Image (cartoon, rainbow, N blue to C red; front, side):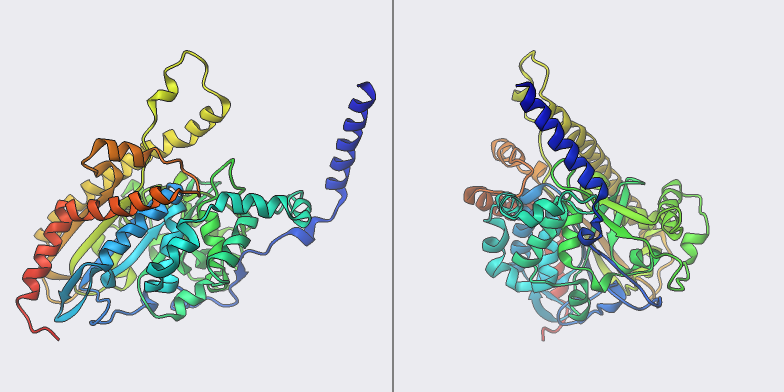
Length: 470
């Protein structure tokens, strides 16, 4: 036994020595490319996806958010898209579907897969997303890719390479077909999708859009969608962080005024300081990213923070380049979880795994609840502001603008048994066929039963009766 113990210690010491002495540069992935020269109109940004009256107009401006929650969130958000695609409307005289007017999707973690796939392939999502993603066991696929590949065993010893990088490679081959953000930018089709991860240093949102990448002088167009979605879903203890290089100061970036000037809004100051930190590449040479749910599991924090950063909702939409919005719609799709109290009935100390999961779940759930309340409060305040403002024909909003806040969250399900069953689906990337079916069905019910959704459809029908249909 002594000899066996000495041999094991010797082997471990040899492994440690090899890890320390090997030049691991061959295993260092280059995730993001530098931006040679900054231009305010270059890249994947909202202004480069112009409106079209017959497909996606500014006048009906739908901002959706797809929450985290593993494949459960992927299926719920897919079900919402499917219901929107089945909903015919007439807007500005053109027959279309409600999904055609989805302008922007903020997404993270599980919701990021659905959002990115829809932005890349549009209606194709309804033909093959279920077979390519929802009804596949991605966790088993990832384990097999690691265990069956000796080259991956070696790469995983590298301090620059982790499980999230292997997951990104898997997504690139099996889901996104090598697509980059340039494929989204060159399509000239809305919606714009803003994926986000969590910055480990500041515990803040890191957005995958060119406006954020301008700060680090990096070219988002060359980044693979698989890297962004893997970063956004890199849950601690399951996947490793993904690191980006900060090239700030090398592209001639001219920071906008809202980053340089302080305002009195404390939320705006906080976000401003987070963004300013990227401008110093010596202090922050690398950005390490984890699951987006750690900073905002709902996906609506960006709406609130941008409004605070530039002082009000009108200025935030003006920054994007929107014009003459008549109906502003916020659609929140949330696949939140419910704690299973049966796990805590015994007087035994909870296991290490359960305790570690609680360290993640508790702050995410509490923070998500706060975000929902802040969003509802903000919408109420924006309604008052727009009602009391000086009404003009030009600008971001029309004189008769309306705001809608649609909540397609599992917490809104009317059947308590159905709600509990769906909320207790584990936050992983493997669903059963029946779970996929139930989540898609639940998404349709959540939309149809929402009072604000019903009000929107009634108002759209009233508007349709006023004009000529093309």
